[in-house]
Image (cartoon, rainbow, N blue to C red; front, side, top):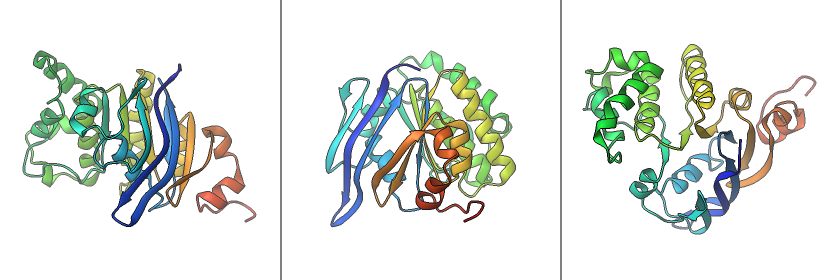
Length: 243
């Protein structure tokens, strides 16, 4: 790992009078997996959406590879090498698997690269290769999450953000998804992972931040947080032995 590729400082997001994120700060070193943890409603999805340019920040800064990208539109951020894989239900359900994937490559200037990018996704997710002509709306939950991740990878990002990749999926599918994330890490891809599945996230991550009511309340090496019973009980709501 080397220096930070992404830095978020004192991020705030408002939806009218409602505060979605109050004060989130985090750093993602190049080549690492950073986990963004917290219960439902803690602000994880809003944080990712603000970084990706899908919602405007009300305060704070987002710095990408040394450049302030706060408030830039989503298409410009994706073109700069930062992609978001949303929850698997946010797809173009009337279009086929391959059409959804090709939409992810819209920002690729050299279209001759698209077949190789498709091959990479199909290698990572063989199920998508089998379903390439199938309408996305007919896929299972696990297949949809594979497709959401594959579509983000089609932009050939330098940093991949994943929003709850395990949400609502069967354990075997979740295990397969995390094996794929570990493989992507070995290939050198940097990732920011928002998860409620704390144990899974901490197992694959290098570093983690814990959000509570829209604020960064704790951070540390993933292995350290995984072994801290008080952290799990207080901030993550997990039962621990002897609690």
